[in-house]
Length: 137
Image (cartoon, rainbow, N blue to C red; front, side):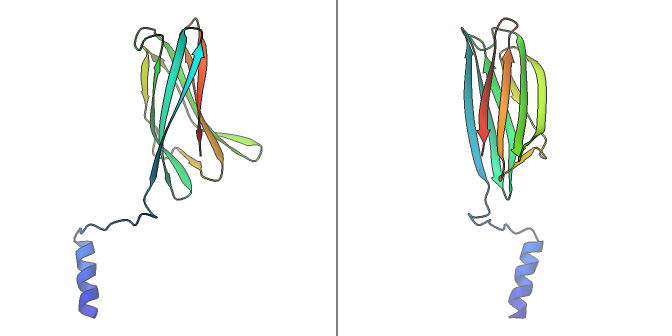
């Protein structure tokens, strides 16, 4: 019996693959929201995974304008959650865009599963502005 336990330990230490049970695997969620202001529109897609007690942000991307890539402007992203009566911002970024933008968040960008979170993206082309919001839950 001791030999079998030692052999299993050696296999694990030698780099053997250990499969994760389905209960331990992360759940990846992708959510998309749209906004409109006249003929101007924006689309925001957020990807995150649920691991343990947190939703961990994986990234997001946007498209805007009447046609993708035809209108220069700015895009701002804010990820936050409420705990009681307090709102906590865990990530924010603004940047110039020519119609599409990709956001990469640090691995530490998380929202507790016990709180209601949102990711709001505001699009502005100088003449029109709109905000697309996705829930994080």
